Image 1 (cartoon, one colour):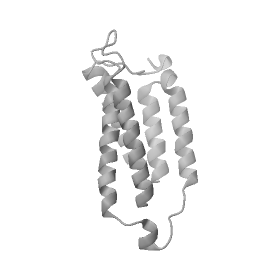
Image 2 (cartoon, rainbow, N blue to C red):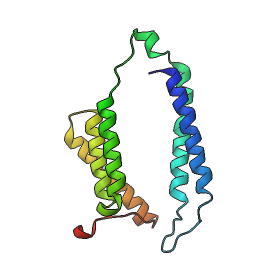
Image 3 (spheres, helix red, strand yellow):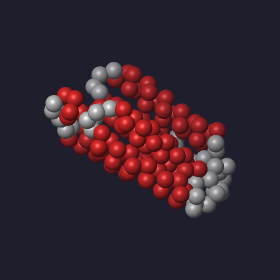
Length: 154
């Protein structure tokens, strides 16, 4: 943990979250065929990002720099970053054609296994629960719209 880097990241994410909230208020309040307007989801994501950034700012007050406490910096993990970055690019590219549930499930499994190998069934269960849960909550309960399943799967 690096106090300076965490503080810079917290301020940057706070700015991005605030920008998301401000710009989502400029979107239309309702959409045809949906009880939830297109402004709700970006506003909530911005709010969560801003709140987590504020939490990180408060947490950085309580720890010392990693370099000072251990004597050396942790190794950079470029391979993990590259795997997750490529997975995110594929996620964005395939979201419309493959659907939210499948692409989110695959992205989360890849992300979980990249960050910590092992416990594959646990990663699968959490990814399936999250992707199906968010889809069910947002589409079925709130009556929003997400690309659900691919045409060839329906």
